[in-house]
Image (cartoon, one colour):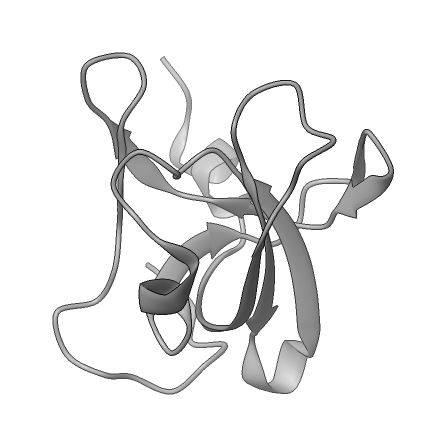
Length: 109
């Protein structure tokens, strides 16, 4: 179990994907995403979401992400945030997203 204070350390925000491209150097099929978090700026992320999403449908989509993990080197790319999703059959990930459009950078509480 974690404490509420532990949970409060996790900075979870809403962002909008502004670019999505195939990430051929990743070990597992992935996309490189560029995400606008409003006042927090633009962050990049690698995401293994190729089973359920095409790059074209991701642009403009709002997502939920953890933005205060340290950057992670993945092949020749630095991932700056962790996009959250629901793990399906072991390979498919359904992205978590607000059900109504909200301002980029808003914090999840």
